[in-house]
Length: 389
Image (cartoon, rainbow, N blue to C red; front, side, top):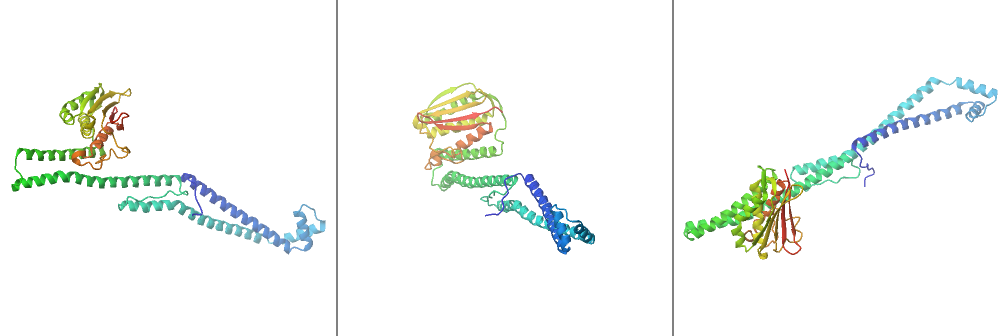
């Protein structure tokens, strides 16, 4: 437990308080020293006076007028004192007290400056750890830290936590990318090697199967590229005023074979919704949600797509289904790259896990956000909110 703790005040205020206290302490110590020495000199003078003169001095000090003879004797003795020597001793005492008070103030000042600088030293040590790659470092803002130092330490902790989280996600994403690419690459390599060795026939069906694996690789690479552009804030490059409902309708028309294969009956409620958007990105987001619905909501046999223009000029693209809905606690992880609601799902049955991450990135790039929730009657609701530029 530290003996001294500074309040959480601004550094300028703490510095002003310390300087003021040091000045008062220095003046106070000098004053007390002078008073003490004056009393000491007075007692010495009284001791060296004749008894009658000393009695007269005490009477005068107590407000009593002594007799004439005693007063004359007192004046005669006081006139014989060496005033110059007494003044020199008093001046020497004041100088000594001033130097002593300055020494005491210097010691206290060094102690207080170390108390103020200690959090900065801890912060420097933690920054060295951060520089060496240890993102788990943190510093504790003690109660004696000034407001600016405490704010700096909080900001440092937030930065370290953010870097640690980013490093964790980067490691996970690297492993996930390797996992996602390994399966189709293994299939491609094995099949091609088998065809070269004559184990597999080089027919149309085999080539078609290999082409599906290549298309899967292409989707993974494109989704990763989209997320990388989103991180660099370069995802949406060309925006023009468009009727979003027509963009969505075109995607729905092209995706009819996929929906029919998944036995989903499509219902639409497309209202005109004009907004400045990057149309290819909107098509990419809508197609990703359609693919998710085809995988996860096919059991409900129903899918509704809506577009709506809100009073604040923003646009909502909404998908409703009657599938199993989202699992509990998905809010914190659903838009994480490579997340899948069911750990048992493979890439073949559950996609790459990049779908909602890509949609979220596209929505954010348009100033909006991705909303998802379970419907009361069963199924899920996913909505892309787009805001004016």
